[in-house]
Length: 517
Image (tube, rainbow, N blue to C red; front, side):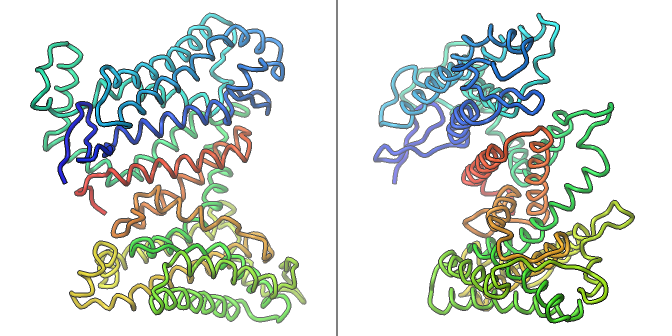
C-alpha cells in the first residue's frame, strides 16, 4: 500500500486516510487539553475558592476577594482569546487531516491558534507586573495546562516538519521555511534519532522529574516551609503510592503478554475483607491468615488465566467477570458490612499491625513491601527465562510458540502473579485502614493500568519495565498529592488523570521501534 506526503509531516495511505505523526497526535491532545482546562479545571485558586476560565469569562470573579476581582475584571475580554485559539487549532487540524488535498495555508492555522492562546497569558503577565498583587500565585492547574499546551501549538510547526519537500514541491525560499527544514534534517540525523529513542526509553524518569519539580514549585507554603517537601507529606505520599505500586507490578506482567486484568480492584477488596474476617472472627494467627489470602489470590489468578487460555476468551472478558465475582464474594463473606480490626485481647494478632506502621514514625512499612516486590520482579524479568518468555510472548506469540515456549503455562503464571500481588495489596490495605470492607478499592484496577502505561509499557504487549511501573505509580501519587495540597476538586483530579493516561497512550503509539522496552 503506497503512501504519500502532504508536506507538513502527515503521510497518507493510497485512499487518503491520515497516518498521524507524533506531532499531529500531540496537537490533537493539546487542543483537547486547552478546551478541557478552560471549561472544567480551576484557573484561579484563592483561599480554597476555585474559578474556571469559562466561569470567569461568563460570570466574572464575584466569588473572589474584591481586590483580586477588580484586577481580573479588566482581563475578562482577553479570555475570549482562549476559545478563539481552540477554534483556530481545531479547524487547522481538521483541514490537514480530513481530506486528500491540504488547503493552502491550513497548516498555519494550528500555530496561529497557539499564538492567540499564548497572547492571553502575555496579557496576564503584563497585567501582573503592573499591579501590586502577584496574580500568578492565585493561578490554578487549568491556567498552566492551557499555557503550556498553547505554547506547544505555537511552536510545533516551526520546529518540526517533513525532512524534505516532495518531488512536486518547490524549493523553500522563505527564511521560516528554510529554518524549519533545517531543524527537520537535524532531527532526522542518527544522533538525534538516538537521543529521541533514549527519551522514549526513559520517559518515566523524565515524567517523574517533571511532576516532582511542578509539585515543589506549586506547593503551598506555610510558616515559610514548602508543604510538599515536608517529611510528613513525603512519607504520606510514599505510603499512599505503595498499594498502587504493588498492583502495578502485577499488572505489568499481564500487560507485557498483551493481556489485561480488570479484577484486581475487587480482589483487593476480597482479600482485605477476608484477612480481616480471619483475624477477627476466626482468631487465625497473622501468618496463617496472610498465607491463606495469598493462596486465594493465586487460585483466582489461575482461574483467570486458565479460562482465558482454555476457552480462548479475551482476558478483559474473563477478568471483567472475575471483577463481579470477587466483589460479590467479599459482600457475602462480610455479610455486607465492614470488618474492623482491633488488637489486643479478643482482637486480631498484633503481628498483623506491623504491616501498616511506620519505622521510626517516618518510613512506611507498605512502601518497603512495594520496593522489595519491585526489586524481586525486576530481577526476575531481567535475568530469568520466565521474564524472557513474557517479553517473547508479548512481542510475537506465534513465534514464541514455534520456538518451544509453553505459552499457555507462562500466561497462566502471569495471571497468577498478578492476582497474588492484588491479594498482597488487599492485606496491606486492611493493615493501613484497620478494617476490611467489600466496598473498598473501587477503581484500583484503573490506577494500576494507568501507572503501567504512564511508566512506558505498551498495551499491545512486549514492552514495559518494573522501574517504569513504579515511577508511573509515583507520578500519579505525587500528582494527586499536589492537587490536594492546592485544594483542587477531586472531580478535576479525575479529569487530569484521564488526560494524562490518554497522552501516555498516544505517545506509545508513535514511539520509535528501537526505543527499547
